[in-house]
Image (tube, rainbow, N blue to C red; front, side, top):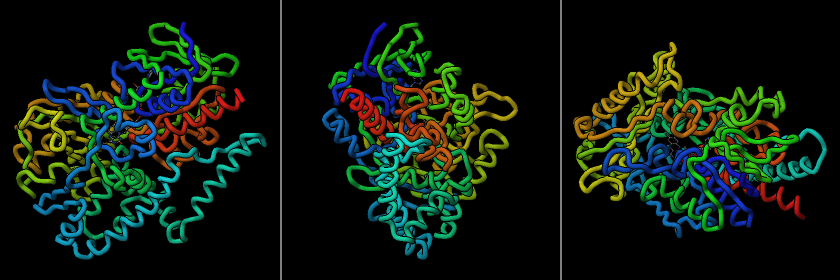
Amino acid sequence: MTETEIIIIGAGHNGLTCAAYLAMAGLRVKVVDRREVVGGAAVTEEFFPGFRNSVAAYTVSLLNPQIISDLKLAGHGLRIVERRAQNFLPAADGSYLLTGTGRTHQSLARLSPRDAGRIDAFTRELEEIADVLRAFVLRAPPNLVEEFSVASIREAFNALGTAGILRRLSLPQQRSLLDLFTRSAGEMLDDAFESDLVKALFGFDAIVGNYASPYAAGSAYVMLHHAFGEVNGNKGVWGHAIGGMGAITQAMAQAAREHGAEIQLGAGVREVIVERDRAVGVILDNGETVRARYVASSVNPKRLYTRLLPADALPADFLARIKNWRNGSGTFRMNVALNALPSFTALPGDGDHMTAGIILAPSLGYMDRAWQDARALGWSREPVVEVLIPSTLDDTLAPAGQHVASLFCQHVAPELPEGRSWDDHREEVADLMIATVDNYAPGFATSVRGRQMLSPLDLERQFGLLGGDIFHGALTLNQLFSARPMLGHADYRGPLKGLYHCGSGAHPGGGVTGAPGHNAARVILADHRALFR
Ligand SMILES: Cc1cc2nc3c(=O)[nH]c(=O)nc-3n(C[C@H](O)[C@H](O)[C@H](O)COP(=O)(O)OP(=O)(O)OC[C@H]3O[C@@H](n4cnc5c(N)ncnc54)[C@H](O)[C@@H]3O)c2cc1C
């Protein structure tokens, strides 16, 4: 048996962030993870001899600048660069949209002068509301407390602070906020634009990791969720971490270790130990016991409460509700080793568009059909694929003259209909994804030297992501803010004393942000200081 002040379950980027802040504050911290590498879904691995790539998460924007600075990630080797063009959307008729600083207007004007005149107002509206979200990212949302207590007073002040942020918004901005939280992205985009490609540009963000049609109510929030990031101070843009997403988590691990945190890998947690309504440690898969004053979990909340805690240790209503926690992204992830760059029919040859997020989904209707198909058949006959070729910005990933690409593919069913298994259909669906890219860039299929395929089942097996859910739980209104993971537990404190949530199942949700880890650390420290005042 070993003892520590806090044990953190999971060395994903949030567990590491939480560990680093707590270790910096002087706590004795131990992090355990069932995998042999740190990083959770933010890792870089060699997937084909000589070719490395970000295996799951593949592009950076949401990582909070305050955390980058506090953890001194640049000092630990993290370098994030911008794409030379943001997005490239080719269409089957040979037209395309290319976005990025100094490009968007010109490119859009060729498709629709009317939309070119409207896009600034639309992005300004999105940006203003994204600023509101930014103000909430590094603070706990107001938590509901039933009885009068110290906690209820604390939460009353928190609610006042929240109201203060919202009060700064003008009435039109408050209306936009309401729209973005409740409407479908599809309706909002149909109202704003006429060009299919510009609608698809924004609509893609509404269905990433969200197993839904862009016309599903609430999908506008997912679009907003992908807009609150920044790269090196440039808001709303996406970039690349040199060395892949693993460079972020390697830097975080270094920061945590530098301040004394211990990270034990290959150490899965079998059970959280509960004594007299208090979490007091964990039992590892190898039988080892680690006792601790606090336990923080960065695993999906449903996984934590249904697999790692004894059912009789939990309030029955809490357990019943968390069993209904909605998981499941419609994503299939591939990494491919290429002997040449693709050449797109719509814009042949090399160019800055090779550094962009290349979205193969030319309309909202296409995305809607992809979802309908996946529900009926298990995957879409015409899937949505984002292609990103990080080796165009980073020569550490592939041999000279060759490339790696991430293919982020939607929609596939988290569980296949009629009891079929992803183990029997992985190859077939991977072929379909490659053929889809080949339709837009003939010759792509023959340039593929090696491939890695991750179905929703593989994402669950490899990373512990239930139903392959990339966010640790759908970003629906009933699972956001004060309801993440449940009303009454949005303050990062679980239903047992000493148990905390520090992963993406807590506010503000999924994405490589570091925010849940940061916010949980703040709450744990507040409780620790209150105890030892
Ligand atoms: C395919 C895919 C693509 C994505 N693309 C992007 C992107 O481009 N940009 C972006 O910002 N976000 C992206 N995301 C989302 C983002 O990666 C995740 O939301 C985020 O990494 C989750 O971080 P986390 O630390 O909260 O949890 P995780 O990274 O899931 O870490 C949890 C850790 O807990 C460990 N664990 C689980 N069970 C146990 C146990 N019993 N005992 C011990 N350890 C355990 C796991 O091994 C894991 O390391 C993507 C995710 C996926 C899956």
